[in-house]
Image 1 (cartoon, one colour):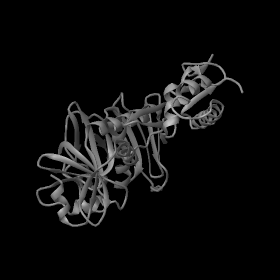
Image 2 (cartoon, rainbow over the protein chains, first blue to last red):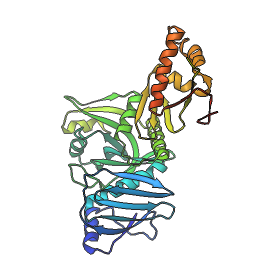
Image 3 (cartoon, chains in turn orange, blue):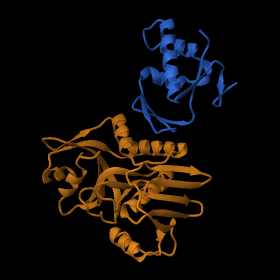
Image 4 (tube, rainbow over the protein chains, first blue to last red):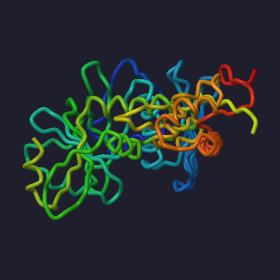
Amino acid sequence: MRVNTTDRDFLRMLEDRYAGYVGSAPHAEIEFDIQLGPPGNSEADVHVTQSGGRWTLTRGDFRAEWEPAKRRGWIRQTASPYSMDAVLRIVHTLVLAKQGGFLLHSASAIRNGRAFLFAGVSEAGKTTISRLAPSDVTLLTDEISYVRKRDDGYLAFGTPFTGELAKLGENVSAPIAALYLLAKGRENRIDPVPAGEAARALLANLLFFAKDEELVQATFHAAFEFVSRVPISRLTFFPDARVWELIR
Amino acid sequence: MSRLYVARNPRVAARSLDGEMMIMSGRDSTLFTLNQTASILWQAADGATPLEQIVQQKICTEFEIEPDEALRDAETLARDLASHGILQISEQPIVRGESK
């Protein structure tokens, strides 16, 4: 994705905010022109709608339009990284939904060349398990995982979207070996989860913003496809490093 | 009691997983998990078979229940599912989502 801005301070802020994810390429899949505006309410509801092939994304602190066929759009936003974060997340949910992938409320990490996802709502332990990761683990995110489908399975990519850990994930990827539904407990153990429960948990943790029937259906089926191909279990853990003895 | 026809709403997404039927409304992304009776009704809701016939052939053969009581329950269930946009109901056969 390429973003164009004439504001040097804002550009510098973006380069700092997305360090490790900034590069240069001759062609961009998506290109946005950014106009900076006055502060707005970032707590307002998000609205994402599509009409005539053009997506409109709005919140109190930004308004954006994007035409996938033209690969171009514009963003009018507060000069805040949080506004840009929100737009990036929404756009990526739209892009991934068309490809059978999604953004998921989960931490993710790579160990021995395989990616593991740890899903859960706020306070479920995403940041805790990320913080406890030993040195041979590469953290992809402690908050929002990027899942892309490919012919032989799924890949997890690092994201710059952070939770309480406030540390950007590494910009790398690996095949997904398992998804764990997090639960805090007095011991460390992994338990099977019935497929229906796994699907409900996955759906509950998906990031999805668009009021668009076609995309809702695509995301729903993508979740079930994921459940049928990736092992999903419940990981109950006591918050110390020994939990990682189970994750290999 | 008038004859009722039921059809699956094509604007929802549905999947069966280990015998559990899950449906998501495309309208508001609400997820529904159907119980056994609702699943039978959903699967049989082709828009052409009267509800009464579905009850006789699919529900009364599965559960020990009087046909009249089963039909009343099925009507209530069908109207409830329709209120959530999961089913379409009509007093006429339903073809491609519309009444004849």
